[in-house]
Picture (cartoon, rainbow, N blue to C red):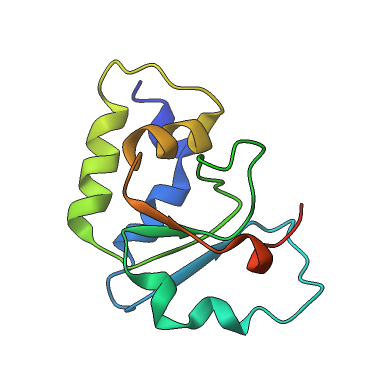
Length: 114
């Protein structure tokens, strides 16, 4: 599983502790409407929040998400990659496994389509 460490770069977003909040956006994302609401404090209560709908609304989508950086969370996520766990969908499946009930969802009317 050591080979996964290089491919799961999104985990390092939690290590950007010089910032209070970080919004991660995949490079292939194009905003077609105002996204400033994502910086409202109510979305920043959990470990992470999800801004894009998934086919299954109970799942975290890793294409756009916000976090409050924490070295502790980053270290837990990195340590988990070294363990023998079952997950699907690469980083997205892994983040769903590890952050199972620890992320908040943006209300459906505010989500961005994909």
